[in-house]
Length: 458
Ligand code: ZN
Ligand code: ZN
View 1 (tube, protein in one colour):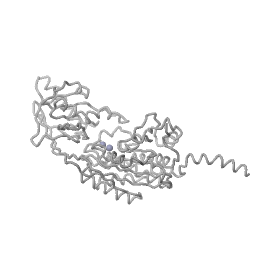
View 2 (cartoon, helix red, strand yellow):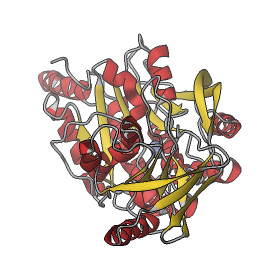
View 3 (cartoon, protein in one colour):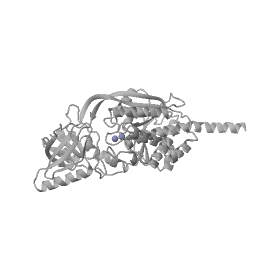
View 4 (cartoon, protein in one colour):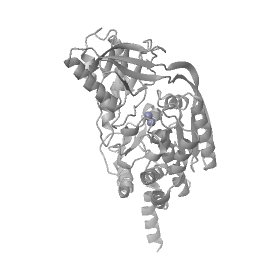
């Protein structure tokens, strides 16, 4: 008997050291799928009591205070505000109309960091470009005194890859048009809906370049302008547009990150970092972008804790000011540069279901990848060989060369709503939101109880 007992100990101990996932974790994840209320409570609460939370504004500050209170009431430890300063831009009036030859109003939203036309507006001829590449090919100086219309359209993809294709139109299209002499830029919304809801979002001008006025037309308005340009061209007529965009830069204001923890059994181990962003664009109430993300990560952390105190600390980063230039994620990376992170994950792609597990250690830690993949297969999550690079606010993990995971969500509907007035609570499907919480609970629970390195040194 004695010999047998020793033999069993010898076999069992190494196995237990490799994977200490609490027995109740799977049951917690299953429970989350059926009845999680935490994620909904967060996103319903912040969209109702705070609403739009544009970066650097008083509304974002109210969002931070609201989130701090919510985290404290929901059992999180070391709830802390980490303030920083940022350059803040505010929307003004926004109107667009075709003056000749087919006078009518168009629906437009200014892009973040757009310049101003002044109260009187700008009236100028419009030159259309059917793609970003066509604008790139336009000769230097050819847009002098003109409004450039960049009509590059976005297609629906489940993995959101259409954004990488269409995104540059918004990110750098206006600056490119300005470099060729344009007095203003109007883009087709980077979005996939057919509603008269323009999609805002940040655009970028190089340091020292004066921002030109830049706005996004709703997709139906862009369709109409495209037809009008074709008909005007066929008649040999010039199409002129009047644009009034009066946003302003208000200089440096305060923003901040809200951090909190579920303290682990061994706080000396590098933590598992879960991120989302608290700010939203000002047109909607920031439900899918990104109230849902903060609700999902907080709910998952609570479910993991309910299965037993995790080995590693779970740290939550509710980043501020993601939308206007990742100010919060960058401030966090700078302030915590010397604190190693075991693995980082961000939820910032709406509230529809998780369908694929991407990591940056699939090849280097195949045993752990397989364990994670097997654990979430029952929620309909598939494996992948795509190398994850992580969300915007987990820059710290990229700088440290650390492990990152992306729980890829179904992006089929995301860009119908993204950065529009339609980003509101009713667009969240509670069942799919709960599926997110279940998958995150399962994955975070395994990682937070993993003693060894998540991404072995290569
Ligand atoms: Zn976002
Ligand atoms: Zn966004």
